[in-house]
Amino acid sequence: MSKALRLSEKWFHRGLWVVALVFAGFLIGLGGTIVGDLPKLEQRATVEDYMDRAAATQARQTVKDATRAGQQAREALEQAQLKLKIAQADSQSARETFGNWLATRRATERPDQDRELIERTARLDALKAAERSAQAAVEAQQQAMLDASQAVTRAQTRLSDMERDAQGALRKTQRAQELRVFLYRLALTLPLLVAAGWLFARKRQSTWWPFVWGFIFFALFAFFVELVPYLPSYGGYVRYIVGIVITALVGRYAILALNRYLERQKAAEALPDAQRREELSYDVALARLAKGVCPGCERVVDLKDVKNDFCPHCGIGLHDHCGHCQARKSAFARFCHACGTATRTASAAAPNPLV
Image (cartoon, rainbow, N blue to C red):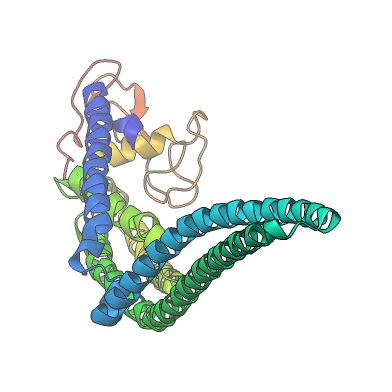
């Protein structure tokens, strides 16, 4: 029908479509923000919420204390091992010195050295005792490290058991929250889709059609695009089922509209020629003629053939002659193109019931 519009009307029409798209874009932005923020309605649960806080705190403190004790035992073990090496070295050196001295004592067999023998033996025993003491200190620190390691293992095992039990409860809560959030989003977008369907059926040709179409684009985008990233595992079924229902409703509406249109066309074609031309909108008639179809029945006719003054399909007059200059002109023209005289149908601008 755009060919029948004035030039300014065409540009205004295009501008209104831009308004519709811009309006839809802002609505989509707002809707996306709202849909994305809906999870904030639910309190975010964590594993800690489903654990015995006192027992978990105690287990973590045990791990911390045992780890610290193990680190201290490791440092003390290093010191004890160093002391043990020194004691072993001293003891080994003393044994070698004593052995050499004892060999000399046997060779000389001097009785006056018996007192020194006793003293050397006592010193050697003291060094051996120091070595045993250092060895005991090493073993004590090794035992402390083992105790700390076992304490950490036991505490971590208790903590892991508590976390495992809490994870199961957390997953159940998260699934319930996911379902509620999905229902929130569905409750928001599904009514928008229903409202868009009502606007399409009742208001798409109203004065405010740019906002109507903008809202329709927004509702379709919100349900079939915006909702997709947030669908749970079963959400796809909802989207496809709603899509099937909408397709069925739109198809039914289109079939019924087509049948009503065909019935109106049959009734209109049964009317007298003059009445049919009077009931046809001027702009609609020009648009159909520009497409090379009959304004009455919308079937293809050769308008360039000068012999086709009437539609061969429905019989409506396509061309007549000016009452002033007798020039051949379109039967739907309001003024003669040759002399500018107004035709009798110049006032035929009534709304078209067939559109």
